Image 1: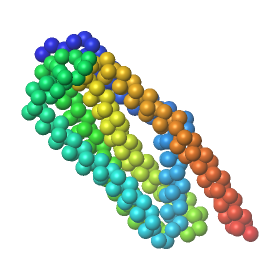
Image 2: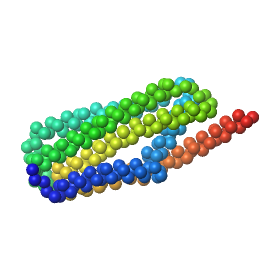
Image 3: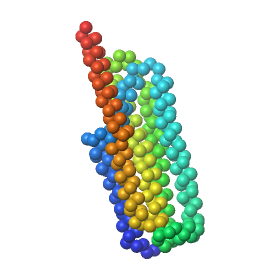
Image 4: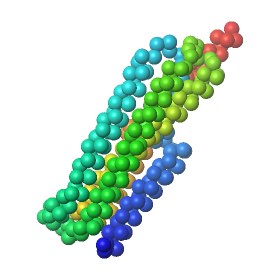
Amino acid sequence: MTFSLLDISALVWFIVSWAGYTAFARRKAKDTDCIARGLHKHRIYWMLEVMTRGVRVGDAALLANLERNIAFFASTTLFVLAGVLTLFAQVERLESVIATIPFATPPNHALVQVKLALLVSIFVMAFFQFTWSMRQYGFVNVMIGAGPLDSDGSNDNLKAYARQMATVQDQAAHSYNYGLRAYYFSMAVLCWFVHPILFISASLFVVATLYRREFKSRAVLAITAAKGHLQIESQVRETARNHKIES
């Protein structure tokens, strides 16, 4: 089982890229406008509004739609896993296919198995993330069902309860995001079957794509601007509520 230095370097680069970007995104989201930061604020406003609604059927439908999307990826991940595991019995045939690809490195039997094992590990992790996300959305449903009505939105205790609901929903969204991120990086691993240099380039491309979409996309600008509008509306309502109490 002899692996080239380039293959080992490519694998290390891949791991560092994934772990490094995850740590970077988590830290940067604390003080920089991004999708995660903006949607967290939206979830807080959403849960605050939920507490003022006597009928929450619409909110339950929205959460069910989110869970349905995650369930799709969870079930798809199982199919992908089954396909990758099947390839372990067809390594020789896979090697013959790789050998026909122009500029591809000559296939190494042991290395091909390592690459397949890496894909299996990625999709197993993605499955755990998706299923944990589904469970947490279920927790949010329970919390919404247990939440009493705050018709005028003036109960500070229920506001704190709403923020806790938003926190659980935020954690569910993070798990979903980690699962999707695993899919992105699995695309980079596919390039390793061709050439380690392509693997390194694909890893860098995935990191750049994720950064652009999570921090620099037009969706981020729109979500951030919308967050400002909601904040203004919340302040107007709070002012009107205080004037009503004083009068």
